[in-house]
Length: 271
Image (cartoon, rainbow, N blue to C red; front, side, top):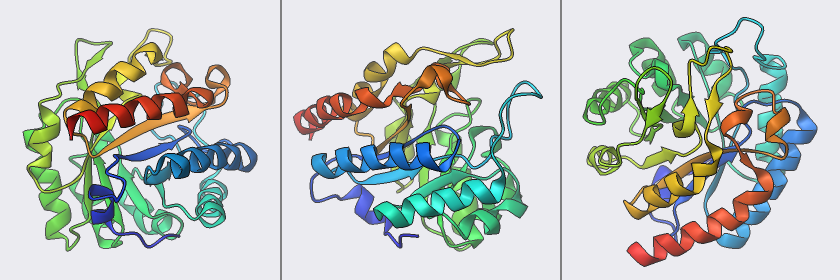
């Protein structure tokens, strides 16, 4: 694991945003290492601080027969190998307070899923590991209300918090991004990330499989950088159509470098 300081993400020498990226779920060692290798090469070249993302288990699927993972320990060990092989920090979701210490033994950042961002026991357990805690804003919450999630982690003795926006519920089957929330959450003194791909989901489809609008990834990302997001969260895969989770809204791995180059130009234009 990498012992990195959160402040370095906010004040990078390159002046760039930082990036959390990787597959939705850990599907296997070979594909995780392949995705990580390409992302590391791109972000090193572009001087973008990088955190590799992968869920060791998906606990919030609509259908009972949806893919949930390859086994907790197996997936966590793959995340650990990615971190050690490429010298990058890693992030994964946790779903229950009992998972915090287990996951913290393998990764550098613990992520709280949006649906669980008000779960006090979960936030406290994550905080007590001493790891950086990335809290995703619930689709059902205002940006302002996320200060209470930050306070819970801080009051548990951990000041290392990131907040991530992933859009707001808009009707039953869509999300919309309110960009006013990014600077509002930055007002809590924490780095703020835009989850580009999840904000383009179309949840609650009658098929039981979430839809998405990946053609708008560039639009959402450009707007987030333009309003000053500290970082971006992007799920990416070399074959989204056959990804085992969230393929409908992921960015094809071959497209990410071109997107990041454009976003750096946006960043340079506004700072």
